[in-house]
Image (cartoon, rainbow, N blue to C red; front, side, top):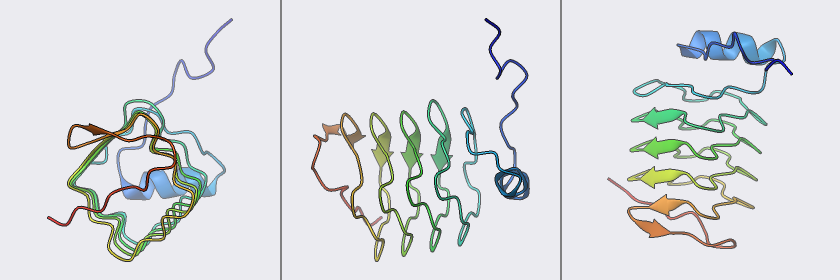
Length: 130
């Protein structure tokens, strides 16, 4: 069976990500948007699962309801005032994030590491102010 993602190329910018999202694409593995300004972006239900990098990414005020960051690196990212309802951070590497004012209802964090501490199901996503 041929992998239907054989010719997949992850988005390289906010503009490309938003355009592809608006056109109905939801799966974005291996995305590398470190240092990107994604403030206010609406990516509800997007799937960055597996090896995406978001170091120093600004998600402030973004709508990320049900978005999957499973097995992603989320380091020094700013989620202040973002809507993270139902977001998935399972098995993610989370370090020094800002989440002041973020809506964090129903976040899934099983197996994620936060500064070397493993998080269990039902644990709240810690907020770390840098």
